[in-house]
Length: 247
Image 1 (tube, rainbow, N blue to C red):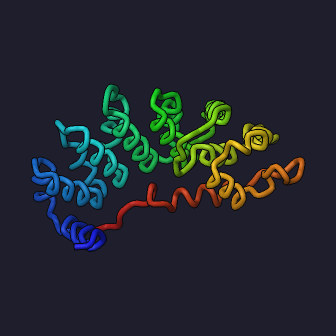
Image 2 (cartoon, rainbow, N blue to C red):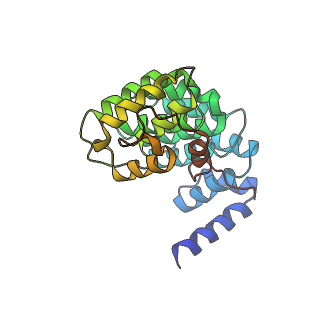
Image 3 (cartoon, one colour):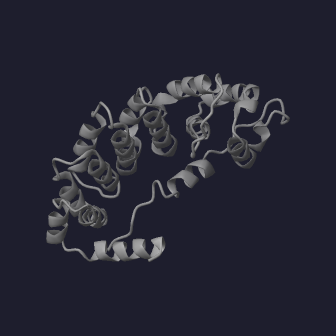
């Protein structure tokens, strides 16, 4: 069976599960049964929130799946569970914190800004990347100085690994969403990016050509700030932030 056909069949089975079957699946030692139950719970709104939040004793792989699914539901229970996940430390917890950050951003929007801003100082770069992703998509402006400083440090060295979405373009999106009368940190980013243009990956330069074409080094001396709305909209409409439909 082809991968797409298998995924479609699994999705149909997940939607067909009753609440009682989901509860059994979430306790199953069989990973396929567990995975189907998690995905089914992620389509049930507040009921799914309660089911997922009640699961205990998970290994790290299953905990990541539950964290991701909690981003697809709303309710009174999942937020506290996600914050306990964000407090996890030690070997093998980075993926869990990344999944929990994205889930909190999806569930809470701008109200997640405090935990997203705190995660910008995480010791693990992947967690910091998810923090700026959440801030770019939904965060308020409290972390603009930290985000700018992080981007400046990032562009001060040669990067060898390209990530998508790019932490640079996410930071620019975030800064542009929170400009004050003089442009704030977004205005300060313009000379920095031009000076470090050669350090950008081709995909990042292509992103600027599409979203902020006057920023390029051969553009006008004082380019106007770009409109962040299309940048933010692309993030919110991506597979990272969209939620599954109802069963």
